[in-house]
Structure formats: structure tokens, C-alpha cells
Length: 273
Length: 236
Image (cartoon, rainbow over all chains, first blue to last red; front, side):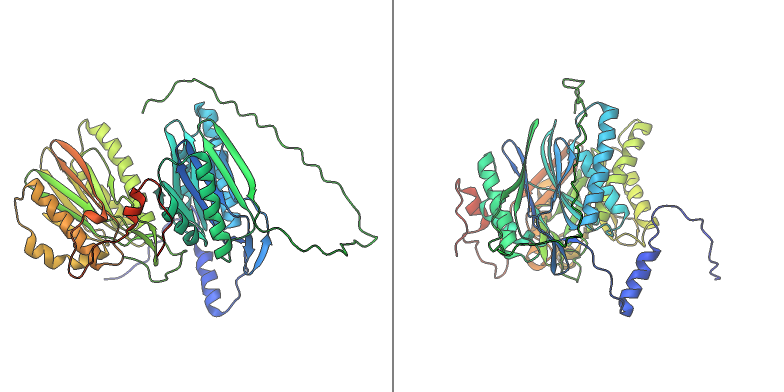
């Protein structure tokens, strides 16, 4: 039987040819450029009034700590936040992308975003990139249907759980959760447990460190506790201080935040389902 | 079906035991609940029996991402098909849609699936759709890494025309035997029974399963600690 190679027109979509070439180069001995990874501890848990998300704040570039106080809890919607582990650029980009898509969706529908919408957008994007977008996420939020917590893996699979951990410190944090989690925790108990789980990751995992960030999401209300715990203060500060050479120009930076002008219609038609 | 790299960045696979069994009047689907990434159990209480329509369910094994995506697509197509047909879809149609996706994308997917359900024309039916994308109608089907340990068991224990209780007991016994021997299977046993009356979901926690050869009684297990109102941290 003759095997004629049929020329198929390119179907569009992402071309993985360069990925294969990169893998071949690495095999031949080329040092791949390093990238910023959030070797991380991220957690989420469902408590009686909603969802609590937690994260450490260390971003690593191989063995070096590139950012001692980065933000790993990303905004998706006013009622939905997402912790990201893996390549920092990938988690930032994918959460920003879904956040914009949801803003447009809210304008189209006139309703508060649902967590499952964010989940489906994220999982279908990650699946289509077959795991090359290295983003492992803990997505949590409270919408009309109640509190939700999901984990999303780089290949696009998802799990729905009452408590979840991801990242290099996930085993340390999961040990704390499996030991102390129970249903119907109060807000303070939940925050305390999340802080303990993240601290466990910070102190027992080399890829996690610095401070604890926490985000508490309840019906109609969110509390972003940036640097809720700072168990790694800088203890030695040199008295000599730093001096800049006389040629250095000192500039002033002023950032004007954009106005948050999304107007959610209260009491619009409620979808019955 | 767990992957050999053993690091947390390897694709999430349902190293699994899945079973589908027909009985006199319907089908019983069963599965364990362990999802593993290498040597770590990513989810100890996952649900591997996914709903496709009111009367057809799917047992998933292999790559979690691939099987979740396939089931999402098939659920969407079946929903459209039900609207266009004007009546509930048959199990055969559902199984064939699964097979088309699995076969036409065989190079990119790693999915071993069992489709089971009940319709008014054929009654209870089980279709296996293993790795290459074949479709095979069987009186019972097993799949996943834990199924290797069950071929002999089913050769001996399976019989035609069981009652619903017998079929459920068979499925639970089989999954618990596979859990005992397969490291990639574990957690709880979930079953879904589908017949003319509808769908019934059952859940068997680990401590309710029978103990097999050389297994010990659970002592200070996680379930005992969690069921007390103020669990103390584990002390050895």
C-alpha cells in the first residue's frame, strides 16, 4: 500500500513546532534560559460563610529569590479571586485574560460573574495549550449559587474540593489541612488555619517563603489581607546604609489608579437554576 | 495509569479502577476516587463517574484533563442532540459520540472510558471505549490501572441476569479488591445505578469496605479523627 503524504492545510491555532525544537536543543546540551517561577504554597478552603484563599510571597528564579514580596492572589472578578503557582508570567497572563473576558461578559449579561464561568474559561485555555502554559491555580469565589473552590492543573483538569493546596509547598500545607480542617469553620478559625498552612509551606519548603497573603471572600464582600503575617522580617540592616553616586538623577513616580466603574445591577432578573 | 516521572509537574492522571456492569433492568457503574500526580495523591475524593445526560453516565480513566474535556464536549453534543431528537438520547448514540472523539484524536489523547446508561429501546447497556478509540458493547466492562487485578475475579464472579443488589455488591467488592492491590487506586468507592426509574448515586467510605488478605483493622484513622467535633492534630 503506498503511503501518500496528504498535504493538509494548516488548521490554525497554536503551532507546537518550536516546543519540539526547544526540547531537542535541551537534549543536545543547550542551557535553557531560566524563567521566574512562583515555587509556591497556595491554598484555599471553604468555611461557613464563603471561601478563604492564602498564598506565600516568594518568587524564585532557579535558586535565587527574585521577588521577596510578590502578589500571588490575583483578581478575577469582584467576587472571584485566584491563587497562581508555576511560571509567574503564565499565571499573571492567564488570570488577567480571564478577568478581562469576565468583565466583558458581565457587561453583556448584566449579572455578577459565576465561579464556574471562570473555571471553564481557564480550563479550556490551559487544555488547548496542552500543559505548556505552566499555571497551576486555586480558584475561589462566592456567587449567586454559593461558595466555590476549585483547583486547576496546567494540563486543564480541574477538581472541586472543600480545601485545596497547590505548588511546591502543597504537601506541607495539605498536611496541616488534613489534620485540622473540618466543615463549618468560622472566619477567624479559617483565617488561622490558612495562615498555619501557608506558614507550614514557608518554613518547610525551599521554594516558598517571606509573608502570608490572605483573601476572605463572602457573599457580597471581599477582604484582601495583604501581608497578613510577616514571619520573616529583615533582622539585620547595615548601619552604613546605601549611597548613590553624585551623577544619579532622582525621579519621582506617581501612579494614578484607574477608577473601578463596573456597575452591577442589583435585583435584576435572577437566573433560575 | 500513573506516570513514571513522579514529580508534581507531571500531567494529572486518574490511575484508577472503573467498572460498568449490566443487570436485569439497568446498569451499575463503579469507580474508586484517587487522582494522582506521580506519587502524590492530588485528590483523594474525586468523582470519576460523570453525567453525560439524565440517563447516561461516563466512567473516566487515564489523563484527567483529556477525559474531562471529552466529557464536556460529549455532554454539549448530547444536549443539542436531545433537543433536536425531542426525546432522551440512547446509550448507543452517547457511546458513539465518545468513540468518535477518542478515535479521531487518538494520537493526542490518553483516555480509557466506560459509557453506561439506560434507554427505553435497549434497556441497560455498557459500552467500553478503551485507549485506541474502539467501541465495544459488553455485558460488563472494567478499566483503569486497577482493572488488571479484576479479570480473573470477574471470570469467576460474573453471571448473567443478576438483581440490582447483586450487581451493586459485585461492583463494590470488585473496586475494593482492586484498591487493595493497586497503589494508584484508593479513597472511597462511588457507584451510580441507572434504570428505568432513574439514577441513584451511592458512596462507600473506605472504612465500610471489607478487609482482604493480611489487611489490618483501621486504628486511629483519619476518618475517626475527623468525625470528632474538635479534632486534635495527629500525634503518633
